[in-house]
Image 1 (tube, rainbow, N blue to C red):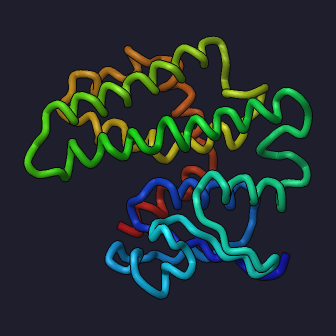
Image 2: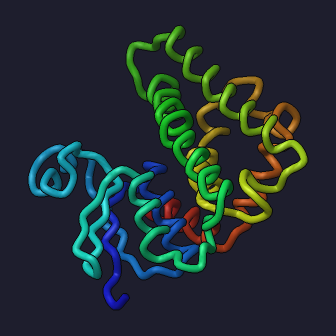
Length: 217
């Protein structure tokens, strides 16, 4: 590989930074290009992603343009992780990694995103929507916390994309729950989740992306 992958992202949105973490973990060169929200749903970006959202990537080494964070991560693994650094090549772990990745893109990201919207931005305030999505956020934390009892990682004995796919949204949990009694007691209510999240946050790639995201805002 000789040319950097172009990542189209946003300064605060978690999903593009999730892709960047995988690129950092695999030491894949990339350029992170911030797309303004106002430009996402009009040309020329719609030619890259007709859905008008980020992330998307263009890989000049293979010629592919791809959108949807889960699809991008699977592409990066299939194309560049030949040693299975962030996945497993054998049964059943290979499919358990996919299981958790799909849970993240369908069961964590969308609901956490709705929690952000109704807690922080929607006017007028809709208490029933706030309650619905914060309850779902807590349910997801509970699922992870229960499963991680006695485990360091979601699949096998190493960090994989199954774990890393959750981290950028999980970074936002204290902010999303700001003012909620659970916000200051995450370690008490979800000790296994909290320990796992802190374990991931200490990884050099995650630390770098957390700093890059902060610098981009």
